[in-house]
Length: 133
Image 1: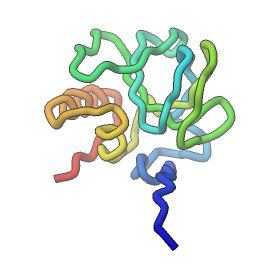
Image 2 (image 1 turned 60 degrees about the vertical axis):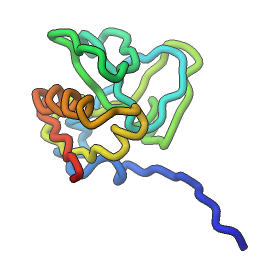
Image 3 (image 1 turned 45 degrees about the vertical axis):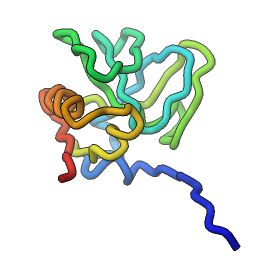
């Protein structure tokens, strides 16, 4: 029987530690435009009430913006989901939390230098992006 790569992602592939996950302290819902959002997609917006856009690797993060990490849709944590119109996405946007850089780098196609820029912004929001060596 051949081996099959199911490529199933779980929250444990991304989140190392999160403050009070049962209460959703580090999480919120934000509006995202139509598109497909795998777990770990980085999105950027000016305020939690604004519509967020996908982060473009290497682009400057505007001052006062919030960087968020998609972990699911309105209903639950999901490995990937598709928004057909402006709809809600479940994100981690503040700490204290620790996330692994693996999904962030692979899903968003970030180079090491770009990952350092993202890690600096996330750190300012209380999220430690643990960079593997």
